Length: 110
Image (cartoon, rainbow, N blue to C red; front, side):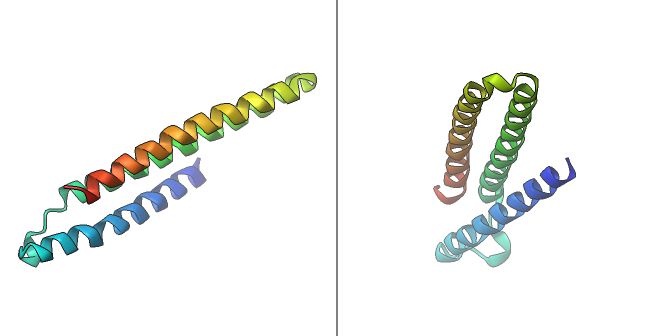
């Protein structure tokens, strides 16, 4: 659990740092004072993207753990369980990628 939190917080911080220069450049180009930069959308978009990544990591970890437990209980079903695990993990990853893109678009598009 500690590793998941560490990875999630690192991803969140990296996403927030990636959104910060874009927001600063837009504000400077518009002639706003450096102290009056509106960071609300950039932070919100970065937070949304980071939370989506954290949620996907937790979901895929639970999918993998449950699949391994199922295979340990019924080794003869390993092939079918593996296929279902990969399919479900791909769907979770697709939704998470969509959420990250939407979160970053919130920060970069006005």
